[in-house]
Amino acid sequence: MHGAIHVFRIVNITAYIGLAVVAVVAFRRRRDQAAMWAAAAFGSLGLLEILALIPNHPGNLAERTLGRFDIALLVLFPFLLFRFTTVFRHARRELDNTLFALTALLLVWTFALPRIPQSGQSWPAPFAAFVAVFLVHWTVLALLTATRLWRAGREQPSVARRRMNMLAFASAAITVAIFLVANTSSSDSGLALAASLVASAAVIAFYLGLAPPQVVRVWWRFPEQQRLQQALGSLLTFAESQEEVAGRVLRTAAEIVGARTLAIRNAKGTLVGTWSSPVIDSDVSEPVQIAVPEGPTLEVWTSPYAPYFGEDELALLQTLGALTGVALDRVRLFEAEHEARLALERANEVQASFIALAAHELRTPMTTIHGFVTTLHHLADRLDDAQTEQVKGALLQQTQRMASLIEQLLDLSRVDAEAIAIEPKPLPVRSKVDEIVAAAALRPEAVEVDVPDDLVATVDRNAFERIVSNLVTNAFRYGEPPVVVKAEQTDRHFRLTVRDNGPGVPSEFVPDLFERFSRSESSRAAEVTGTGLGLAIARSYARAHGGDLLYETAAPHGASFQLVLPQPRTGAPK
Image (cartoon, rainbow, N blue to C red; front, side, top):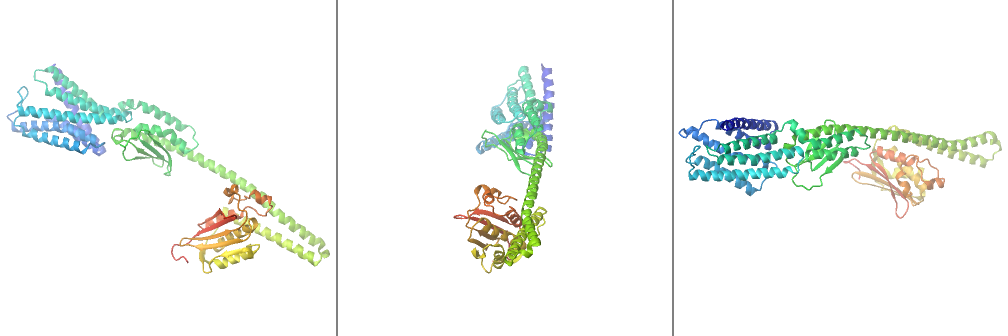
């Protein structure tokens, strides 16, 4: 039995020194507080094992001092391990201060002991009291450490939970080993062997908690691995939206690291999906961002334990994020192709409508003009002066209609080619509005111009004329007089409103009001002349100017169109 005890002693010394090396290497790699306290705790335990190899002779002052230093390391280990747990969840200040004071007291007491008895010697009262306090101190700290880790591990994913359980078990096991050693006499080989076995079990559990081998991690991660494979398989199937892709992986990704909340943003930073745990837990760390180069970003709100105990799992999310990025790109390409196809179909519809409308609108004046010209050619000598003037007037009216349509078609081509040149310059608004009303209104006297005489706006003259003339023309064509044209200017915007007193725009037609070639059923039924291009062109000019053209129902009835154009921030005329 003594041979077995000696073998276990050598194995345990080697194992605990190796455990210290593992903890120190982890700290050099991670450089965080948790790794620092783990390195301090297990480094002190490894140093204790190295110093224990040096003989301790009571007559040698240096060796006696070394023996007390060994005891001091034993006092420090459970406190340092407890401090490791407080990195993740702080202890109450009163408890923390009490444990610190007790540890400091024991350290001072260690070096103040008058004598430390050797193996087989009886314990004097001061030393017996010291051992009692030491065991209480160790037990309290070990139980606190084990309890905190075990309870916190219940809410963690498989790997983190088992690592924390291993550390909790090891904390309890090494406490049992300390009690066995404290109660073992030189002749009690059975207790000595039991202490060695428990210490061996503790060091194995410490290894599995601090740095479990990869094969063990894979075994522990098996439940999440199955769900991960299902999620990866779902990414290979077709999805119609990025939100659908995110929905397939969010819960699985969250379960891998025990996330309380997880969000996915695409490569443009747009939020495409979130998942939150139904469990209310206030113990949540700051979000960890896992970014994939030229891909999505995963924002993970986990417990404070996850970055340390779930480091590999967080790295696994990097892979899942990359595959999610591929799926999101595929959906983006599908959406782009779908939008391009819809745009092409819309363009085909617009082109077909354009051709049909242009042919219809041009054919009507051309047919009329051709008829009158034929009449003049064959019957000019038979027409009296009144008839001749009537024919000339009709010819003038139809050529003006044709010129207006051709001008609108040219405007439409400029809009499509994005060739509208906007050159804002100071413009006296009142005089220009009067000029437009005189040219565009069927009854200029029925237009009320409410524009200050000194109002000067910085606008493009051509765009302003095209927009306002269209609004005034439409007010008479589709509405009823009186028509009011009102303008005002603030520091940042110029606003011009054209309001009529007609029936207004039908509510069901308002969404299509500014669409090309769109005309309401009421205007078609009333056979009001028009192409359905005027408002679309007017809004295009307004937006090319950096502004907009808006519609609202006038009170108590009628239609009201408001032109809004930006003005220079400084030096703008008032």
